[in-house]
Image (cartoon, rainbow, N blue to C red; front, side, top):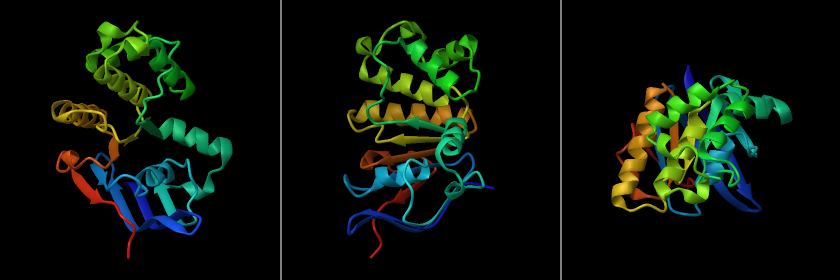
Amino acid sequence: MNAVEVEDLRFGYGDQLTVDIDQFTLEQGQSVAVIGPSGCGKTSFLHLLAGLLRPQSGSVHLLGQDLAELRGASMDRFRGKNIGLVLQRFHLIKALTVRENVLLAGKLSRANAGGDTVDALLQRLNIDAVAQHKPSMLSQGQAQRAAIARALVHKPPIVMADEPTSALDDEHATEAIGLLRDAVSEAGATLIVVTHDQRVRGMLDRDFDFGVST
């Protein structure tokens, strides 16, 4: 079974079609970089895959589930169980420590990820030393690792990342993609990275050049 199957997917705003994909499939455990220029609709595509947006036509299947069959709370439950999101701005809760942010994510996903699970994950991502720090005390790299930990804590089969290298120099961009790829691979999950960053090309199993068909 493929982790992701997309057919005849169309989405746009007003008269502007921003997502126009005839077919896109991804095997479980595979990683892909969806690459295209800023503003071309990549984030909308990611949101369609995550069930945060509804397509105007076409279908999205994740893990064999047709997302069109899910609404409201059922979509939220499916997403919470099966998808880990690493967003561009991280969205860590400022009032909580790194450990508390990850614990809360585990609780909200109903994965029952306890303190031991969180501590092991933070150690694996090499941020256990800042577990009691709040986001304002973190470097960019540490905040990104915290966001990855939060996405992985409930052991989702699919992880999606939006522009994870946009604010990083060459060295840290390579490190960030390597960390994300290795952490997801170790968990046996599928990874989808959407990015305008051409440096990511060739770093994952596949590249998918994103653009509206003509």
